Length: 64
Image 1 (cartoon, rainbow, N blue to C red):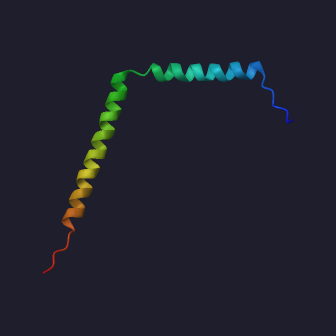
Image 2 (tube, helix red, strand yellow):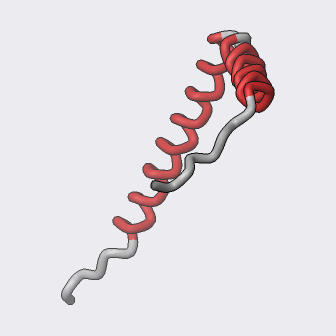
Image 3 (cartoon, rainbow, N blue to C red):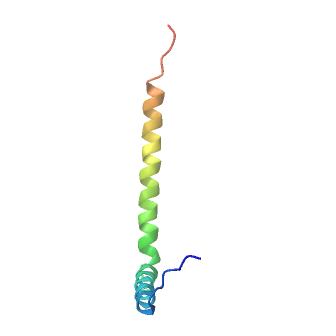
């Protein structure tokens, strides 16, 4: 039977402390900041789609 590697309790607590610090920083970001960034990204994607569709529509070839 293979031996399982042992982990030290110190390693577990350090890892959990890093996780708690990360979670605390994520939760501390105000919703208004997140909302503003999401809206800006959404607008950028919308304008990129609109401009790309205009370009592809303008380059359509007609049989003459």
